[in-house]
Image (tube, rainbow, N blue to C red; front, top):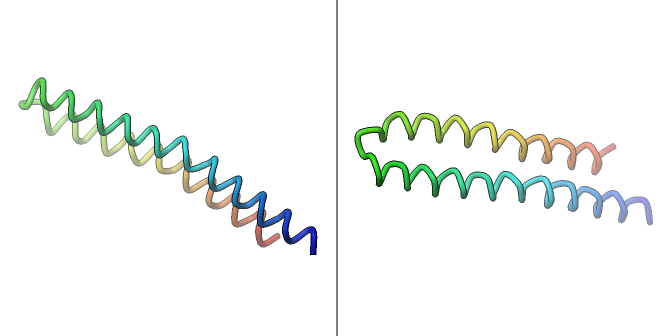
Amino acid sequence: MEADVLKNFASAIAIGLGSMGPAIAIGLLAAKAMEGIARNPEAAPKIQTAMILAIAFAEAVAIYALVVALIIKFI
């Protein structure tokens, strides 16, 4: 029984810590993109494209954390 508890705890820690970084990164990306668009509205399409690409890369880290958490939980 104790091994199951430790697996659940490790899984929760992995996804919790693994999703905090991308959440902060996405917040900062969006804030800086909005600031850039406010300063130069003509560059909005270029800024928005770069922002979406960077968000996808940041979100990949959270997906990796989810995979690790599932591996810990079920193996």
